[in-house]
Image (tube, rainbow, N blue to C red; front, top):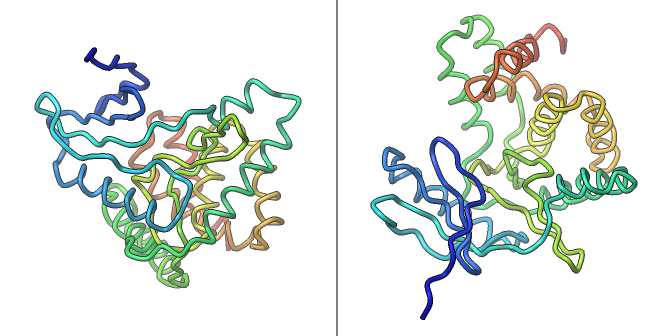
Length: 252
């Protein structure tokens, strides 16, 4: 039997993502913690068990000395690609994006870590954060209700696959938590702001209307999620923008 051809999709500092037949393989570098690989597979399998349209976990195993996760490969085009390739349909695709996010948040995330706990850990891990700012952020965070809605944690158009028949699936669930839909929307807004501030504002208004969640409530989450993203910022421009979002005074 001929060996399946390996098609590289993404190469990053910590992992290589490739396709082999009908399987998508995420192979992590040797330095990546084994527990982290199994945790990602566990989170993904939980999401799968909720009934969310997502890639099913096939395996977790060592490949050439590196731990890897195998997932169903989902044929289709990402929503980000469709937005780029079909500018005439952009508004309709943005609506679809928001509709999918609202649909995902309707799932109850049994067994996943709560968003409040994860965000608190991120805030406490920032070494350069002023103690008074950290205190205010944590006070705001712990004043939020502990919901159990499914939150993706990185919900953006590139993580949504549209199949040829029009059905959709959401991928890359490694940051998923059980929590408040407003927190997930705030994170999406910040990510879109880094790309296109005008699009981010359009998204926020559309999401608020379709989810029936007030913009002001989503804004209450923005300093909290911005603090969590600060450690992941790749450029000085991103760091400066997120640092501005962390300012509590902007939302009083």
